[in-house]
Amino acid sequence: MTETANLSVRNQTHADIARWTCPHGRHAGDGCVTCYHASASDDPALPQWEVAAWFVSARPMPIRALHDVHRHGRRFALDQPSTPLVFLLSGQVRAATGTEAVAGLVGFLVDNRHIVDDFTVTEIRAVHS
Image (cartoon, rainbow, N blue to C red; front, side, top):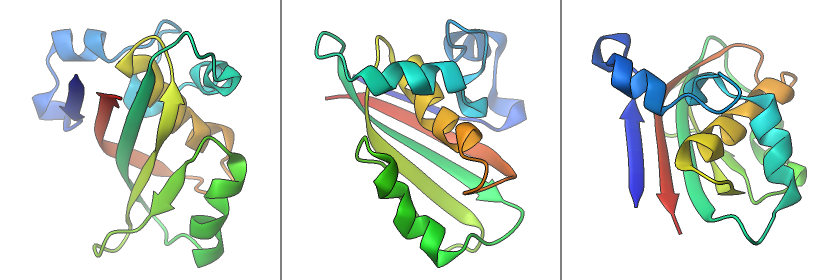
């Protein structure tokens, strides 16, 4: 099962907003630190998700930050496609739903503001693996 959302304000219906809101009341595209910490348990009873979040940043990210993300575990990767100031954060996350998985992945950015202090998520994807 693949769940994808383009987070353009014009494209988000009320149903989409509700669908992408985690149990803690945060929209997955805004991230949820609680979902991020909950996914750290790596509970084998929960489904595993391949998750991706594309985001833009007002400032360039140091190359070192792009390479250091993997040290935070959970097989996260932070890449910069060819477009300036556009980044892709991806990883494997165990969570009950795709919404929680994405909220946890983006929650990683919120919890680690030293990596990127200002960002806007533009697209999210969760694939049940």
